[in-house]
Length: 472
Image (tube, helix red, strand yellow):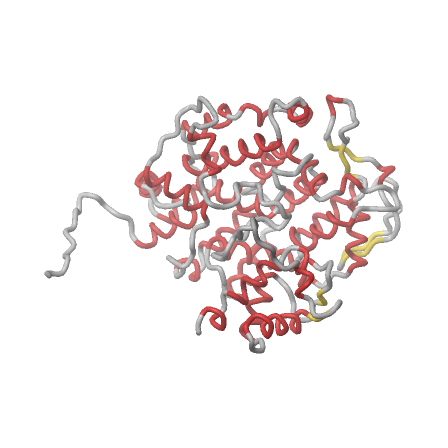
């Protein structure tokens, strides 16, 4: 049989490899229209710079109409809560509307870099739309992320951290004087800023919670017109000297509102925060395992620019590693849906019922819908397994993997390697485990450690995706 020979149809032009790579990584996938937009801008670099000024780009008519398709998202938190209590529109409806609106914007936008960054920061500063109270504030929180997506991380961190949605989700609203809830103070350090590698202590977590105390919301017993509304209550603020890494204050004032903002800005400008954000940007746009050299260079720009997001993202795109990484990333199910709809030029029409494309879109990927990830860490960004079925099956509880109450992480990895793989750990496996879940070899793991509480699935995936398990 004769070999197949390609018959070129040169009338259909195609982009260069660099152009295609830019559109795939930053543009929600290559399309003919985005390619033409890139050519009109003067090339891939010029297109990217134009995208960093989204206000200069006329948005598509479809995106401009999306908000009108989901009018309930514009309601006040009090009205959203009233609809839920009355059985008219519930938490699931709000979550579904948010996810559908987000995906529609990504599919039809002419400002894909902006929407990419909205997605990135929504994941980094994640608030689930499925929280039984925070869902009332989730549409308003989305506007905060969109406002700062290409601004300064320092400003976004302050506004997002003190937003009622975050205060509810991470339990800060339950803090009272003398007994601050530690959840928000812990996740602020571990997930949103410096990370575990910064070396903060449990005492610092407690001080972090003290600093945040006072910011709260009006609960369900408040007047109907102000339920779940955020405010600062100095009678809930816990005073007393605080120290978190290099941040220290006597914390004597009953009103600690400004102290909290000062603290948040301090965390935003720390080298450890720069490293964390630089790595996450590199994982999103370059590789699941970016080089430390790339992370260091991007982190430097982040700090030198005063946490400017545009400058930091530009440093990623200007790197040799970015341009050499074409084809190295695997799309998530949601990204695949967006890219497919864009490539096929699917046209969304005004929805007439809940079976319409615009209102069913978020349920199409075989994954967690936008903003519905239940944990505060946000959706995984690498090409690993996202979820496992739980019906008619039992899984070991995470704490049951611990061989004793307290164990160093490097020893824990060796224990797991021996238990799961029948062989000792290796330097390469330990390194992968540390990078994969942002842990240090010397971290002490206990039953209430984040590694056990919510990172265990990812840690097990590191071991079970290794060659020691995959080959025989």
